[in-house]
Length: 350
Image (cartoon, rainbow, N blue to C red; front, top):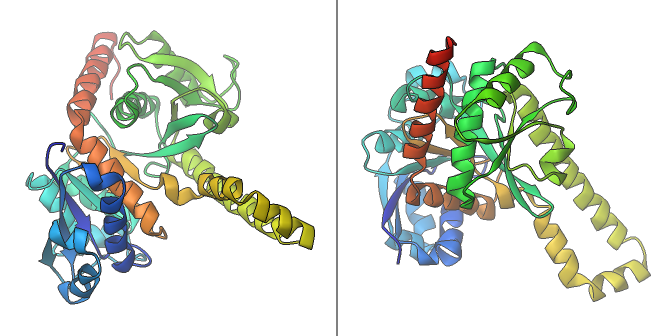
């Protein structure tokens, strides 16, 4: 049995909360979580949670409910959530990480509110301007990490350099690779391509002595079909890429479903190849890679997709456990300190 960890869960965040949240915890404990000594502090309305926990015995045995009737709604403005969020399930979940009662907070709630409350309570690491949202992304033969995927619409060269450092440390913690490759997303791989910010970030990373395995510019098709492990971009571009990929996966699944039912012969061949089609459906399911992380905070916060199912929420919990078991936060701090020392030595102002 591994070391014991406590995860703080916002049970009221998400489209189908709290049902999906509790089902997700139970799914995790029945599967990947069976070998981990993990416990949960669940924040939410106990009147709604108790009947759900009665149907989830593994989760009930490892959980403590912290009751609150307040919650952050999906349409609440981030500024309003920050001002009025105290006492909500989201606020309390993050506060438990701030007090170090829990190692990680997980929420499927309002992204802007989650970022604002997380930054207010946990604060950013020294020199980090704004947290980045990092998401795992399926590739042909593995996974890569893309950041930012929505936390920062506009970024400067300093921020992109920080994203590279934090994304590299995140990949090492999550996928246990000693020297992941890092690429900067651009409209081409030629040196002359890209705007001034991209070029400045490329120059900084190319001349850095941090020991990053920086491979230069990568294009959008390298995210899924390339060999790069960490793809760095601004939140505007990253979020569009993420939503486009999710939409494409759903479209392919729908095309496949209709094709397999189009004729009697198609139905027959589908039956013969059922195992292969189930595997394909599983690989095309965005919920299998659900769970993005706010990087740059003095604590770990996992953002689950608001419309996820139980499997997706379980995946987000699994990422939280992996990070809790790693030396992720100390590694990020070490490499950020080295980056900022470099900047000071060559006169950059963050």
